[in-house]
Amino acid sequence: MGIPAGEGPRVKTRAWRALRPAQGLLRPAHALLRPALVLLLCAGAVPAAAQQTHILVITGSPGDDEHAKKFDKWAASFIDAAKKKDAVPVANITLLADRRATKGGVEKAFADMAARAKPNDNVFVLLIGHGSFDGRVATFNLPGPDLSAEDYAKLLGRFTSQHVVFVNTASASGAFLPALAAPGRVVVTATKTGGERNEPDFPEYFVAAYNDDAADRDRNGHVSVSEAFEYAKTKVIQAYQQKGLVLTEHATLDDGSQGQLAATIFLGTGRAEAALKADMSDPVARALVEERDAIEQRIAALKLMKPSMDEAAYGAQMEKLLTDLALKTKALRDLQAKKDKP
Image (cartoon, rainbow, N blue to C red):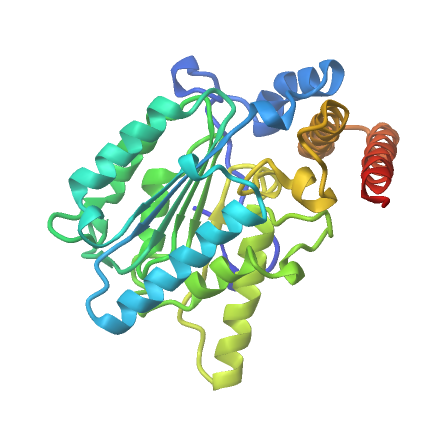
């Protein structure tokens, strides 16, 4: 299980079996991650242009017109941020709403996404709607037959070499955690347990995070899953306090690595182009963008290794990477400034 929103920044650590269950090994998370991360740091990360993000947004049965409008608004806001702020291609975004959000529609969407997703791609699934838990089975409400937590676990099992983010913003969504938590996967739920059945405020604020610069805590121009979670968690607590109500929802994030994996995953990979207004038709600008994004990924990899590294060595490597990033950024800005001159 993850750590609930109201219990501070600590995130529960879990011993991972292995990066792939079939390996059958039993080691701490940092030991499993180290070989791949060392390759990233020493040989250079794969340029961001080679990595894709695939997004599936599902809005479940609204129950009434008021909720239908809210769900549609939140889904549209999230997708708009993915396209405009994180440059996720439209072809990589699937929205299932109304009659399309059926059991068969969801299963087909997962199958299609699995066919498109390549190793090391990001897969982001967002559920917006109502949930239920009868003490034994947790479900997300759809028109017609529902899908249970175990059903979603099977669907996610297709993605064995991708970075997976699964966000269930429904009531009672905490009951999804035991079935979905897995190595290399980020799971976010609006509640701590299936017993928290009141309609949560979490989805409104989680979606808003991707459109609010205040959510970008490290000011790097894009919002990570971790930053969106912390932003929404804080907003929920503030909303309850302002209303004088006892907090009845405790959002939870579980990524098996003390929140570090969630801090490295964003909606898309086109951030440098958007933030720096680079002319991607220019081969020189495109090369600089790809080099800059590769450095960003090496920084993210280094952050994951921090718990197992000597402090001085970590500091020295991070300083060099940040310097390299600053130089690439300056080169891009200088190049664009020359193009913008009349």
